Image 1 (tube, rainbow, N blue to C red):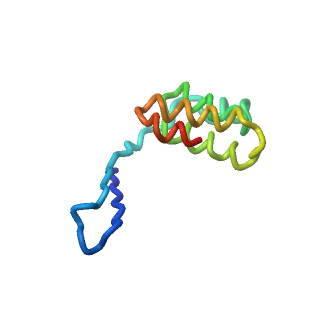
Image 2 (tube, rainbow, N blue to C red):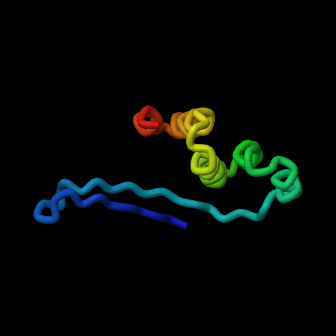
Length: 95
């Protein structure tokens, strides 16, 4: 799947639009993933997904932990690390 998003700060001057796009490839679930996730529980899900190379799932699991535990700085640090790994250091710095 390919996705794109546009921020339109000035509808009168579309040359100022900020556009980004990306893609998501649906893959078969890695063998044994469900069992490893069950064993890891919610707090370990991001690590399991990361080990499998499932970046969007890693991101979602990390974000879920941030929501569940807003006072735990480890999850915000994990999110920052993920963002730096994919070349988004400015976004990471805002975490």
